[in-house]
Image 1 (tube, rainbow, N blue to C red):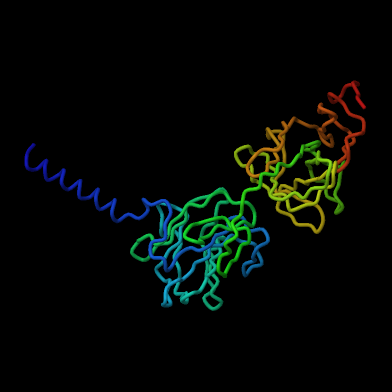
Image 2: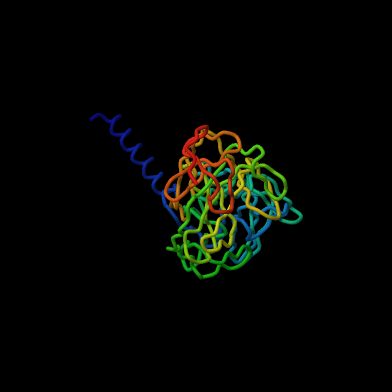
Length: 336
């Protein structure tokens, strides 16, 4: 080995050593200084706190545990391991002992007078990495949060990051840790419609497609953190609002294709078509029931009768499927 080759090997070893020593991103989860860090986040904010637009945006809470006020100009937040300067703080101070809420709404703006800021990215409820860096690119705080259900916070307490049962945006974190529920809802999909033109209308006169869910339990239940989707790779597509469902009762979810809001009724912001393969309801990222979507003609629903599925010319959303049913459309093989 000649002198030139030896020098190259030494240089490569030195570069590798510098990377190991100075790139804090190699650590999975840590608080480097213990002073300025991300103290709480929420990735599925449904009812916890509204932003200045009246929206329930996700949020990131920053805490200054040092003895001095800090000018955050030059600091950065990111949900990317490789683009750590994704969103930059403006000229805004965080006082000693203060909690500052930053909304992860993708608006990318700041109201300096009211000290309300919005990042240029949103948080994923399925979990991702978050970083807080200074102007030199040093990672001050970095951690990876897990999948979070609606209105469950994730934050720092007692030397570690945990899920919080009671979110505390802008305040000291609670020590009460959220435990994953083992409850298993006994729900089934019992009827759906993909081409509702004039057959079934809601109380506002709209002809929306629908999916009907049946509570198989012999008791009243409260649905919470239950989701419905038409995409197997996205089980958390639409979160059903917290709802009381009586024993042996039926729940109708209207499929609006658009984000609509009415005082009464539940309206998912996606529709069904003949190209969809499945309808799935899930809880804690586990499937409760799934049914295959079959091609349907206008104003015909497809529903469950016993253990079989039948076609209905008179749909019965919210009620047992007791009207005349058919094993095929256009024939005389009626079953009641």
